[in-house]
Image (cartoon, rainbow, N blue to C red):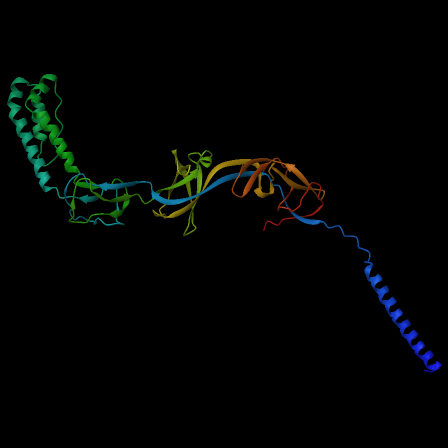
Length: 379
């Protein structure tokens, strides 16, 4: 190989090596530049927006929620004390039938028993008649009274009361069996009244277990009769709640189906605590012609009323009964007096009127935290 050719090859090798070295140097310089991170930008200070509400102190009425089924306050079970066949009368003995006070509810066939009563009256009449001559002779001062007694006596009507007697006359009359016969007859007449049952008050028959022609036996329940305007709602409340309720407390009632509101009062509070539930029965009285027995109702019972207090979400209080307020756009932890807790609210006092109270829990809140306050809309 000639000298010139070697020189040419050498030049080519040197040229290629130089280009490679330049390429490597350029690549290394890029990596060095990329490995140096750009200067960090200083984080901007953020201020959290916080919603608040203003304290408006005033009265607050605590109401205890409850529910139950409406029952008639005046209710009687119509029960027979005698035996016989039920007669047909007007109106018929049917559920839903209304009656006025004193109106005949049930009439039981009493002709046989009435005949027996009349026979006993006649027997007493004959007995008094038989001693009348002796009274005229031995007790002339008593004779006019007993004669008048016989004049007033009518076997078709209730026996009149016995005349007033002195001790001697009483012994004579008693010895003839008149007094014992009189009281036996009165007992029969009282039993005769049981064959007719009258309405004790204006009301409605809500159930009927017999019908006309049924054979009725003593002690048999014939039906139920209620007054359709006076009702009671029995609710079971925890013992701790009942201690705050007084008889006469106002109750707001609402029908579940119609959502119509009614007013009632606490009529009675049972003295017994139900062992299984540790609750106490409270009876609420309500009067309305629009209501019906068996209606399911909700009740809000007025238990306590506080003055100069403020109600807020109980979740805003910590375990030490402290909450955050806002002063000069900073959070300040303030201790308050809790007067009462409901299911959702805490009733507090100790804050001045217009104080800005944090209205929603803040994650990571701390004393002195800078915030951007925004008034919570109440719409």
